[in-house]
Image 1: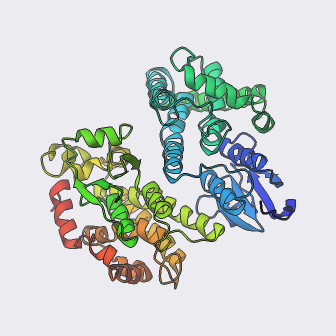
Image 2: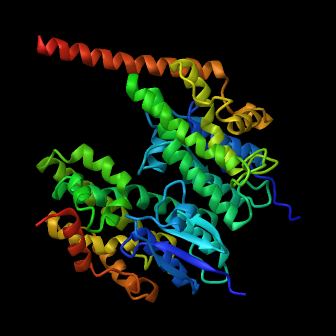
Image 3: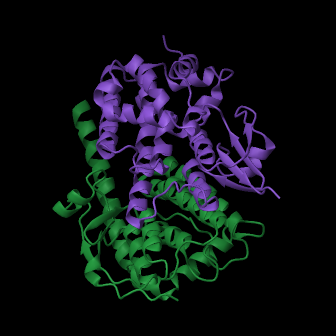
Length: 247
Length: 252
């Protein structure tokens, strides 16, 4: 096997945010591929000059700098890591059909599942109930694919025996499910309704590299509670304003 | 034995056109199956049970969904043809970024511009017997913009027009003086964007602005792309597209 020279840590720099699941995706990927990197914590609400220079179109995180050149969007970054370091552990499967399937479900994760989960957090009452139902619908689809005859039937992880691209994409973010269950007092991942998804998530979170990447649950809980209070406080303030205006 | 390649598609869909262009660039023979999105076929429902949308590429019985995923699949399977994505990892990342940008921004802005000028999206549903397929391929985006904006007229129209022009300018800046988005070789980003070019005539006509005035390099690029057989074969006549949109959305 070809040996690539050791990568100096200064070659790779990640701009990210500690509570951002997309940042975690990249951190986990770098760890799995054994690539050293520098990390710079960013405040998503106050983008640094570096972030604005390297991501002028979206101004969002994460941004991976490779020898000063920016690569944007976590999913694109994961592809870039595989393209640039093909001899390090591969994240994506090698077969084109399997790659297309992984890409399809990663798009589903970002386009359908994540917004549904976010809606649970940001809504109340009937709106929240509808959002919870939507999450269940989405989880049902993944549960099917993990079952017999599904795209990932019989596998421990989406990537097979080891975690790969789709595990990273789905897994980094799925911890919010448990956090929101507690903070919002809703049931999202019922082990009876979604036994395979539940088992997969438990096994994913048990991986050493994952434990080293994802923040402690109590930190995430505290963060979620703070944001939720701010959101509700904002609603209450607006309502008070409306009342004052109409009186 | 030849591998069976089937494309489930809708002739007017820019997403389907991306796939047709990619297949033509690679010289892949395939069977085209026009879909009726008012009466979805069992094949479509089986091939794309999650979204029930076109395009779907079925290769040796296995379905691949979503246009840019299909284009990447075509590039990876028929790798002896001219590559659609560049070899350099950083250039590949940039190509993926712009493909994603076009998916996120261009398509949404196109739909929102249509709904700024014309009747609400509910008129689209009432015209269900006339090309509702055209509506349904982007229903998510239509609902997102239509319900938010259909009550507003003047100011929202100006906002949508401004956003669309901004997107054109960003793409113009990215293209620069290159022959194609990837440089000298026609590729992934060109394929992602070129099917939207026939829509420009509709926006200009109804929006009261000139795409050529705002993004002349982009217009010149569009003409260069049209010189390629893979593009000219699927390219819709802009006036024909205008007539279809006029019928579907009910504008004067």
